[in-house]
Length: 295
Image (cartoon, rainbow, N blue to C red; front, side):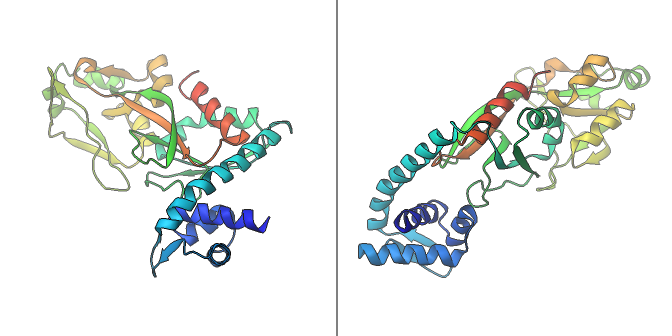
């Protein structure tokens, strides 16, 4: 069993390129990971890592050994998964990172908690781009494309940005008929909290993307206040359709310039590719894919 523990420590260290990150994933100290790898190197009689004060990198022998070790660890995880699936309802702690806009996903998250009460959700809402593996998350939800080959991914659903305002606002200020008309309107803008940049309104004139110097009535770094301001007739906001479904249905917000807006986004669930889906993660991914953009 000590050998299996050393193999697992080696695989985690190789994939995270850090004894500290590997220790976080395994629930042990970085020094314990280092000692486990050192014992493995001593037993094998080869050096598996080049070490420096800041980084570790695989030696040629370590890279060759990693492929075989991954298969061993995956087989063990598969056996554990099969056994866990015979033990009743999924349970345990599930650590997930979500963008700040995911506060608007709370109906789906609350429904999941009711459906799987033995799973403890540890949710981290942030617009910071977290590292799933290095920071020890079971999964993250992100909008956009994925380029990290260490991660598996599943699309949860698509969304579109809409320009919206209240009927009362448009009754008093008029309805914009073309993008340039926005220059004479009150615009409620979103600024990304991590970069400080304004979110671009994806306007088009014909088939060409255009930039318009929008007048600024208010700037907010999360979208819930923008929804409230737009509902109260304070201006026009650019918001994801999933976040304003209720307001559009009951008529407190209406869309404008639909033909001049070009946008489609996708929310995705991502998790480390080296892992089999545990029962708790599998049901979470399936549930969110089925319920996030419905109801």
